Amino acid sequence: MEKPVGVIGAGSFGSTIASLISENKSVLIYSRNQFEIDNINQGKEHKGITFAKNVTATGDLKYLAESCNLIFPVIPAGAFRKVIKQIAPYITPLHIIIHATKGLDIVEADIEDLGNKTFDKDIIRTMSQVITEECSTLRVGCISGPNLSKEINLSYPTAAVIASEFQEVIDQGQIALSSSRFFVFGSHQLLTAELAGAFKNIIAIGSGIIGGKHLGKNMQALLITRGLREIIHIGIALGAEGKAFLGTAGLGDLIATATSETSRNYNFGRRLAEGDTIEQIRASEDEVAEGVRTLKIVKYILTKYNLHAPICELIYEIVFKDLNIDKAISHLMRYPNAPDVDFL
Ligand SMILES: NC(=O)C1=CN([C@@H]2O[C@H](COP(=O)(O)OP(=O)(O)OC[C@H]3O[C@@H](n4cnc5c(N)ncnc54)[C@H](O)[C@@H]3O)[C@@H](O)[C@H]2O)C=CC1
Ligand SMILES: O=C(CO)COP(=O)(O)O
Image (cartoon, rainbow, N blue to C red; front, side, top):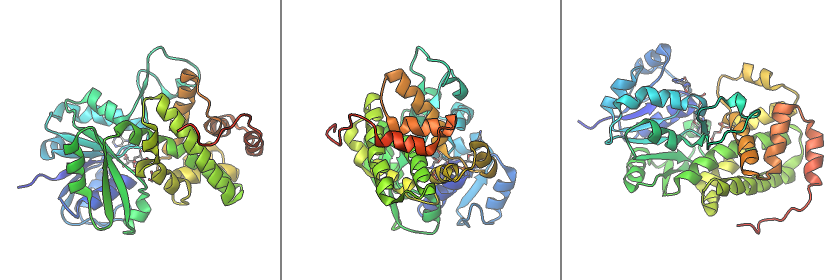
């Protein structure tokens, strides 16, 4: 009998991915929450989705690794390495792992230390690097693109990119996920896809700030365009390929997230602009806005690599240092020496 496809994480996007795959293959989804497992196995609605009968849930990562060859981890970046370490003893070179996480990992450091110290070694990792560091498989990839889960759950059509150095990873991902409502492109630019997916959340926070301040579409377009320029600039410094940021997993995802009122990152920025504090927002949201954590990591990268990215820097100051939003915008509007797109 054909093995099911594994999904680790039954949050918003893990559930969406499981439901997409269930159109093609049976799915075994992992949750750490017994209530969620029971709900899914009893056919009850979970995260706005009523799963098909070929979706079952488990709380046992060993069982998932032994049952599935193709596994999609969909866990927030802050918990990603911990969860991968738990499943790592059961992963063999035969496994293919395609993650959907849009964030970054840091090694040998606490996220809170990033603002205070500089570390000698390179401490930033993408999720595919975490997987290959912790597990014995090399066949890794990521899925990224304009994939707001709430839209996919309403069966609105969209597309994503499976990026991997290995064609067989792309092929397996496409077979599992492709449908008439979900087109899957392939790409060999894994690093770019991962960095683009993580960085665009910062610009989505900025776009939410513009939205919350009612500064109009001109300003939002400007923020997205100039933000993309900064994303590419930082990505190239980290070894990514600049032009690939203009694809579905780059520009496509940036537009979707930075213009969507269903985006957690956009809403985080909107609420900040409307006067809520970071603590108030966090206390009232049970889903993760990855861009807040990524912002700290990007601020560290800017310092470490001596890069200038004024939009990211000002969003950092607004979020973590209470910089007045009007002052930040006024500063940006007077920023000296600003070429347009002649850097690509
Ligand atoms: N929701 C969306 O529209 C999309 C989300 N993503 C990315 O997918 C990742 C996950 O996002 P969501 O599913 O939306 O987040 P979520 O907050 O809805 O769910 C996260 C899930 O991870 C689980 N989890 C967290 N820490 C864990 C741990 N230590 N052990 C076991 N399970 C743990 C939680 O129980 C929860 O089920 C993020 O990186 C996000 O950027 C990517 C594309 C679209
Ligand atoms: O990555 C996403 C859409 O592609 C989801 O964005 P949010 O995490 O901001 O909701």
